[in-house]
Image (cartoon, rainbow, N blue to C red; front, side):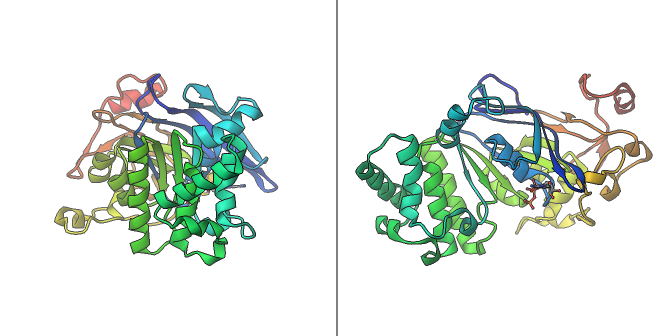
Length: 349
Ligand SMILES: Nc1ncnc2c1ncn2[C@@H]1O[C@H](COP(=O)(O)OP(=O)(O)OP(=O)(O)O)[C@@H](O)[C@H]1O
């Protein structure tokens, strides 16, 4: 993660624990992320690794059972500590979210135009006539005729509903869009259209983006940088293409191999698949959380819980080793990062 005062979004040591009747669930365990203005960060990982929890935490949309720590700096202001009035403004103009599954996110009993107009009226200080004009323009921007403003969600297809969600996310000219699995519920052809649409709109408007997906190949195509999450942590981070093509963390490599690139013979080597399931966050294994599924785990991985450390230019990986493009394991010095415990540093050298 590149730390800079210029980052539009900077997440520092974010931790989220859900309190449930069955005990505490540490869903996110110390996550650092950064998005520079106008850039696109992809967050990848299997179901349950904490991606949506991170997305919801960014705008304090988590249920009351969630306990948060760390900071979420949006243009330098900490979302986690700001007052409610400020937070309401930030939620639309500072950053907005496109959720997975538009059917559940749209209100079934209201016309979609009214739903898009709501934030414009509440936060944009527009008159009803101005809001109606803006709704028409937003619908056109997402490829729907302005008259569809009068439709109810059930009268639209899945792809059209997701377009409405994107129009709503754009309503107050946000500087950041958080897209959480924006195409998961759609068929493949429509998925590609929606991804192209999001890509075009964020490019045209100079909006920063954080896109969440379990599909590394989609993120590699869409984003500049990529963070791979596992068991509530970022285990790998770097330029999107490079992480996808040559992951440095065994989990990044396994996830990448699970999405072979069509027409690329090298990808068919697929040395390590993704067998098994992620751990239950309430019962993590000792040491590295990926150890039970890791093809290259060693005895010391049961003792060491690795943190992110430099693993090449602008890259970081949380593993005692790094995997190079040929599958040869090399150990690299972690550049003396203070967070790494002394034994681990010694071992890594
Ligand atoms: N409201 C909640 N109460 C208790 N546990 C929760 C809650 N929401 C999520 N969790 C748990 O937190 C962990 C992380 O969930 P999260 O939804 O953030 O992961 P994810 O990577 O986004 O997965 P998916 O892609 O399936 O949404 C999971 O173990 C999940 O069961």
